[in-house]
Length: 294
Ligand code: GLU
Image 1 (cartoon, rainbow, N blue to C red):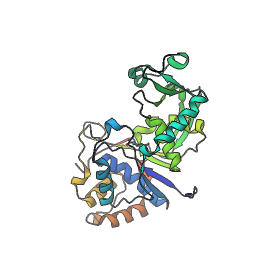
Image 2: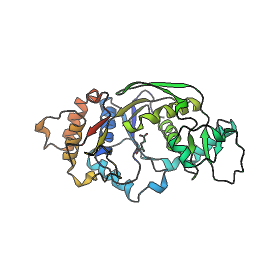
Image 3: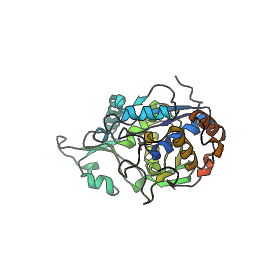
Image 4: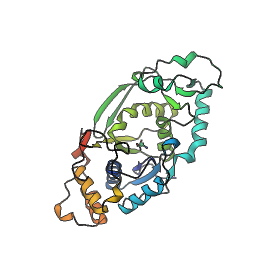
């Protein structure tokens, strides 16, 4: 049983392609935060959204992290190994009437506040349906280590999906269960996930799980202002020399690595970065333009 008092952080990439600069930015931030707290840094592959998974990505992600000297602790976790456990929890929530089947269209599910239309709508369960959690009027508040105090009425998004109509376990639910299973107590991830956090806090409370400490780091954007991603054709980092990647990402992280380290090995760079890690350089920052490596 891992020691709960020790910092346990994680990096949780989805296997949708090779790691690009934006994902390495998040990986390095979470790695440095964990290592500078003498903590564990775990790796989880978020592989539930099977239509988006790309063959070969897991190997490529592990190889890239290895080449960058970002060694993780414990064995790699895969969400797909917890499918039975997610269903066990869903069955329990269903019995307790905390979730309900919903056959509303995807458009209603993702673009608007869900009005609860299916809460009392009995229908034949042979019809494809999702499962939504009943939300109440509570106001969720938490302090993000970089973005400050967040206050969020859960009602703003309404009842949200825990299991999708295509039978895939939804991100909001999976991530809460995974962080609990891995006993993660610190989450460092991209700013784009900040508005998911209140829903995750809501679920943690419902399930009696502990809430980790959150730090949402800026996302890296291109010149057109778009978040680097596979969709925006971000360059895989394994095309760039590993020490140049780490040096460049340390610049993006506003850590000011000394010029003398430009030719240093990744080990020397990471040792320096752990010793000098100052996440507050990113305080209140939401996005950073990728001006260091292209
Ligand atoms: N798998 C998610 C992603 O690649 C990250 C999940 C999380 O950090 O909560 O964006």
